[in-house]
Length: 72
Image (cartoon, rainbow, N blue to C red; front, side, top):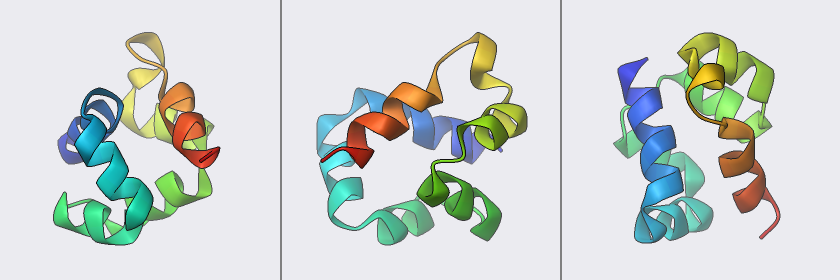
């Protein structure tokens, strides 16, 4: 799970990383070491499950990060 949290943080903080994700999400997530389950949740934009898995709901809002790249 720390890899998922690091990934979510980097996705929201690093524009080049975000562009790479937008161009090849599966490749970037695999390179970041995300599990198959984590990759599926991110691709499905399953915010509730991501919040539950990471506990990030009180610290950050993965919904904004995911939605911002889903709209491109």
